[in-house]
Every structure is written in structure tokens, then in C-alpha cells.
Length: 200
Image (cartoon, rainbow, N blue to C red):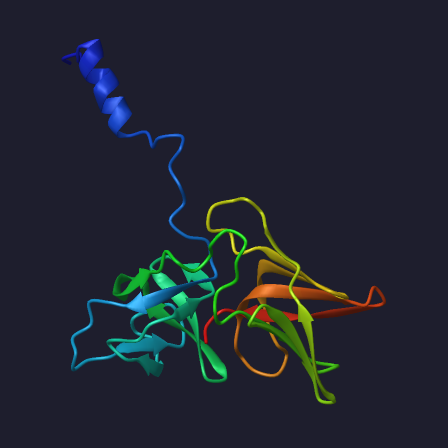
């Protein structure tokens, strides 16, 4: 057996060790764009993360802003209508502009049932909607964890404090699976729970 000189061994080890300052590519949920699909083809959404699983929907070859909420190997979970399915991650490119420091993605919205409610950002306000109507509150702060591309957020808007935490979440009314769990404290007296999404 031939031994490598120590300088060569050190160089080989350096190639196999990631630098300490390397950043994570993405944390789910985040948005992707369809890529590497022919213009006359579609990207299949399958029932399970398996190429032999039944097709339950499709994405256009130029589809953008696709929200992936979970990953299983080379497959990503996507919501299509009222159901949740899986697409091959080989045909998706992640977007680097989704989770910016102290900001919310443009499609960010949260909602819950029993009672029905929703919260979404619009023009610097947090809009609270119920079957009875809407109220608007100026957003005072959007807080993040300080971790690069971490989706976790807390939004403070007058009497409302909303938190969104990366976690599988069901709305209880469909087979969709969201990637953010919401908790909203209303007027310091009521706690609402639900899910958030970031796709428009």
C-alpha cells in the first residue's frame, strides 16, 4: 500500500470538507420555478413521490412561484387545487428572492377555520378578514430568526401578533398540506390557529 505525502492528503481532505461559512440553499417552504421541461410538455404532479404513481395534475413548462412545502428524496410536495401531490425536484429551480430579511413573500397569507379567518399583508397593512368583514392594521414589525432563508416570521400589527413557523399544516377542509403553521394573538385575548401559504 502506497502512502500519500502529507501535503496531498491535506489537500484531498480539504476538498471533502464543506467550509464552515457555507449557507444552506433553502429551507422549506419556499418557491420554485419549473425548469428543463420542453415547451410542448408538462411537469406531472403525482399522487405519491414515485415515478410510477398516478398523475393527479400538471404544471406548465413555464410555471413560476410553485410552493414546495415538503421534500422526500428528489420529490417535492406541491398543492394542486384541493389536493396535495409530488413533483420531481429535477425540474424545479429554487428562487433566491423569497425569504428576505425582515420581509414577507408577496403571496404570504394565513387562514384558519372554526372560526373562519384570514390574515394577509397588503400595502404595509395586515388585513384581518372574517365572514363579518375586514379590518386593517399598520404593520409595525416583521421579525425573522436571523437564520439565512429561514421562513419563520412574527408580524406585529397593532392589536395582532402573528407567528408563522415551518411545520406541516392541514386546513382540515381539503387534502392540501401547507408548510407553515400560524398562531395569531388577537387583542391580547384570543388565540387563532391555522396555516400559511406563500404562493399567489
